[in-house]
View: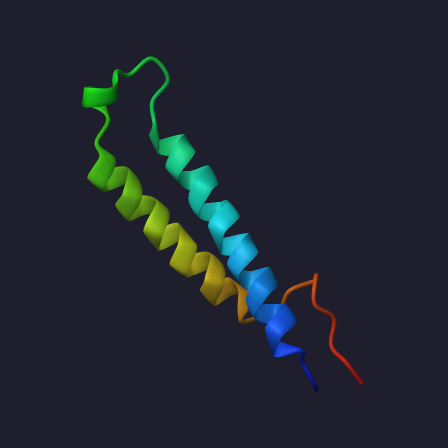
Length: 68
């Protein structure tokens, strides 16, 4: 079982950043004013989603097939 670690790291990072952005956007309530948004909570939840996405990528990424 061989992996191209550079490709895996880039694919995992891209996936985690997308997950962060989607989660962060979902924490902003439509119609809320700028001052009504709990920015710390939104960043915290999105940060946890980023970490969980990266950990899930350890199980494998379909974007990066095994070599060999």
